[in-house]
Length: 559
Image 1 (cartoon, rainbow, N blue to C red):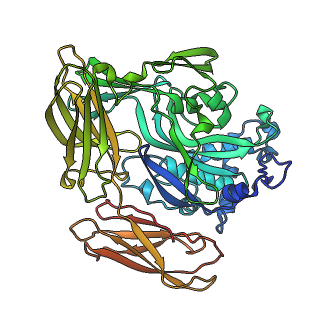
Image 2: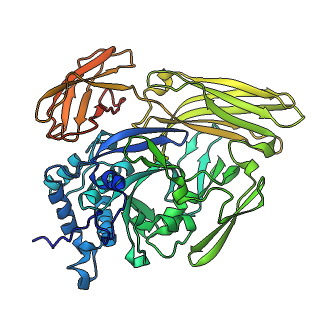
Image 3: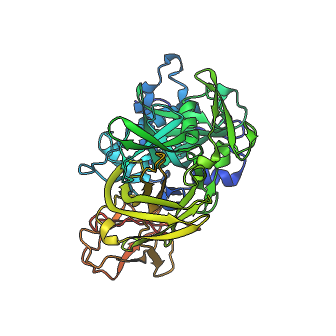
């Protein structure tokens, strides 16, 4: 039979998961809806997620998870009472969830990660499938499922997104990116994810002598190390910020995701490489979570990282060098001297050239991509440069895919001249190549000058998905059927094929609903559906996933 479960409550002051603010308790324990943030740091997108921690049968599934995770606890003396310890409960849940949703780029034998709208179908499939892994997931779905389980067990939790997050780096504090002479990103040992999600849970860490609760990081996404795959946490957020990395679980892994430097290399054959740039502050940007009581994004970066120039960051010259002291990595004091800020991409002022890529439009799938390439000659001498340009598809985990656009250009800059060059990438060149996450990378790299110097600028771009409009066709009442209409514009000059709407809503559907819209043409696509509200809400929400359409469209909406 099941082991005894000792409950915890965020409402009781003596409980290790106590939250004194009622609005916080409502958000992080009782709210069944959330927002996930993804995209790239210069263009953050969001989509709703149905946690569903109070749906029928979810508590039984969570207790089953604890039963199966009991073997994770190796101290037999505590076997009967570890369930009232939120630290160990969180470790068990973290370990179990990390095995649920394997990640894979081949989804033929399972669901694509972006097809999930909520945690309930994932938990139900795991339970009904005799606790076998549910294929497939990404960091967002893993963190969201863990958030559901933790909230169901009474532990306040939220999903957090970090933009530019290194994974599987041999040197934990340096990430290497490889490019060829055309600007194409090459596969390497390191990867820099566009975004990465993990879970935060609120608890007082008695193992750290904490008398009050605070946020702890828990990352169920498996991390590849020299010892194999691990999942990280719980790690006290404040310890990551302060660099106290030897007092917690996997603190050095979390720290490196937020503070690693990025080095770009031009590959010139199997042996020769030329350094393109050394960016000292690319990782750990715009760390985001849902605001309390609204669907807005809250930036919590300062909970993880000090602002430049404060506290543990000392400056010899604030315009040139930065010294960062990191304590307690491998029980040594590590001193990292950052390179001059002038060398940071994309402003390569030491080379006498400043470059950047600006968006001229906000492209929606079906439209051409338009950019402005701005070059500035910082010297009194003219410049004559040859550049190779390219665009290729990137996955959210930094994996380079198809290179679909190439060009070359000669650029002449007079003394102190600023020049803006328009770049145009037609839809018919990129449309058939995009992956599920709709991310592409545009790169401009110079051919080596006489001195061997190479200049490069790059930008990751998110192609927007068609907006979905959802409206009620009547006034909703509890236990009374109400109809609603979903509509979206097909941006393609072709009919939809194999396209379905996947609907899910808290207290609105007994189970996820699917509507086939394959018969629709390339105009406005409407679909009417019925809902049967089971609860009273101040806000009604339906998650809508559009799949099919040759795997081109995915979108979510709210009502």
